[in-house]
Length: 404
Image (tube, rainbow, N blue to C red; front, top):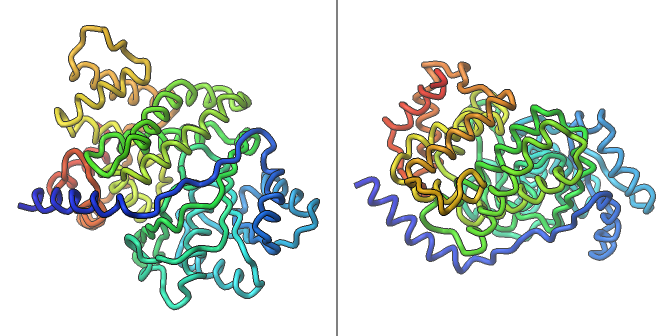
């Protein structure tokens, strides 16, 4: 009965979301394109941007590049550098307070998913000052236009530059609050590959697999998707298989860096429209409890869940194997064989990039909490090919811990 309820919910929700005002972040791309930020600010008559980033990007000199661009154009600005991995409610509240206190009128979020999530969460709180992060958590709880928001990713993976989501962690309960509203889609996505050139190989790897997971989960969802989201998901898979290991092995390959940014953007749009699934639900629980980097969590979980889905996904995984160039359409292999090739290739790619098969940080006492959080996130909203109950979530989490 529970599965039937979930499927009915997803069927009805699919009808409803068709009438929502979907949009994409306007794309600005190419080496050096951060130089166009002042032009965008002038276009919208903005005068006081708030740059939200982290200490790592300050030390690496990347934040200074944005500051120099603003200074050269004679823009006053405010910089917040205190974003941590898995940004907290406290951080979001600090950003909100500073934004209002200093009379800022727009956000520039520089970094990976953490910086963008923190800035999105703060922007939501700015327009909903009487609501807490917890109260804004969930679907369509903001429902108010945000201040102009410019997203500048320094990784190619999270897709946050085009998504409706902001994940904020409660430091007391370790639970991740997901604020999800169409108004959180940034106004602009600035894809400058020069900002990703110094990314360490390990970060390149896990953020790239994160983008791949977005594309795969979006493609596997049985509803919510559109022709465009399906096309973007397939495009992203093709680009990532062609370029991820190139940039892992040669971080100075600017063409491959740009390709990975485009793949991340497309995968981000695809899952924004079609949804993610059980892989992300489990990964979010890992991030909340153990501060496991999100890209690492999804990279470990991805092939195991695809295996567990079994026959339900063989046909679609066969198409993904063909799209990735692993097997020709004309080759006489069954869908199950092509699906196996696709999953095995992900395992092999993970191994070549130093990603472990399991995460032994998982504690027995935490598993019931992980099951609860993952189940609450997934069901009934996510249109996954296989709906997991508590028992199945538990088995998967234990499999992830031992790495088999």
